[in-house]
Length: 246
Image 1 (spheres, one colour):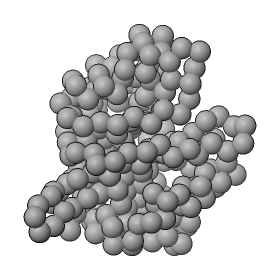
Image 2 (cartoon, rainbow, N blue to C red; image 1 turned 180 degrees about the vertical axis):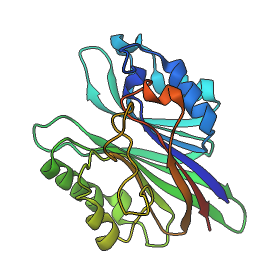
Image 3 (cartoon, rainbow, N blue to C red; image 1 turned 120 degrees about the horizontal axis):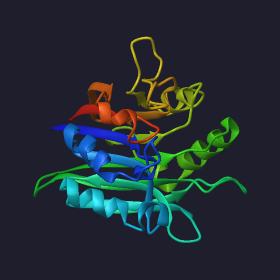
């Protein structure tokens, strides 16, 4: 079966013009019509975003019947974190705490999607939607926490699995750990081996947003969004990848 995936740091739907415009995010996501959307920096009940439940609002406007939210940061009023929107049922979900010491709280939202289910077989996809820290050492520790988590460590090498989100990995220091040591494929890279650039949105210079896959899932294509609206809707551009799950 074919599966389209988008990963997008939406910056609370506050654009480079400092305006809260969730309709721009809706327009961009509707254009790409993905089966699975991984979002970072998603507000709930925060004054800067009119106190809306942003994940729920996006899911409703885009017609996603299933969604899950993993809140990482609590503010004086409201909170924010990662959200996963899906056309497929979510069998289970958990937010894995990736916070290191006293640094800013970070997390990885794990969801198990039921792609197909019948009397003779079931097809599931394990999805890890993360947002890593700003320092290289912090990110290294966070990946270590993720890799030791039961949710990831218990998976076989054949299990279809995606890890995506905002890695903040400017120099691709995490790539060898994921690809060479753990058998993941780096899906959002150019033929040169460099990551597709997504940040800053108006003139991308860094490939901070990424997708890795493992198991019975094959990449067909990957690209950066080139819609005009994506230059201002957030400080990141979304990535779009098409897969075939065997």
